[in-house]
Length: 238
Image (tube, rainbow, N blue to C red; front, side):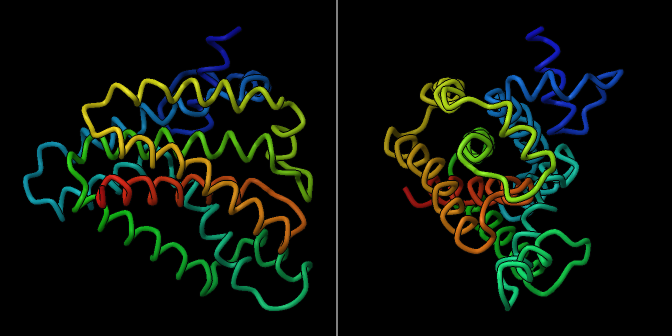
């Protein structure tokens, strides 16, 4: 059922208590639903920061809100990706750094960099509410894009989602992003946000294929964090 797929999506992407866990297969069969979660997580972060007048403090609380509502699930992927990216050696060593449970210098550098870029972008973005919502929806589209296009290099959640996905899921996911066109922001921001939400996962796909021989769930999660940061920067600079 479609409703079960939506519930499974939110149980996977958020910490919202939604009762008894739904079979993960319900979401896997409709992984194109990812952007729906972005409207909720972005909206929650916007609400957290809305009543704080100081822009720097508001931006910090917005980021904290994002981490809270998502359970830092995608942030964990970003940190792992940082370790794999900065590891020295052959492909096997990079995969080992990407997939182990330890947090290294590469993870810290990657996490701090993306969070700082997001924080600075939110301070400059106007209005912050729409930047947060657009950033999160676009971030979730990037996850859908990599789920379809990213050939897995090992078994896991990503390989399962990839096996269940179809190329048309990218189109379905893009359609779920269309409501962003009704946000009260300039068309230029929306156009460049759309370009960004495709460009970031494409670049990560190329990097992942070269360094790791494919994609895993950590790289998909990293795409969400990086895409959100870049979309927010687009809103800040345009």
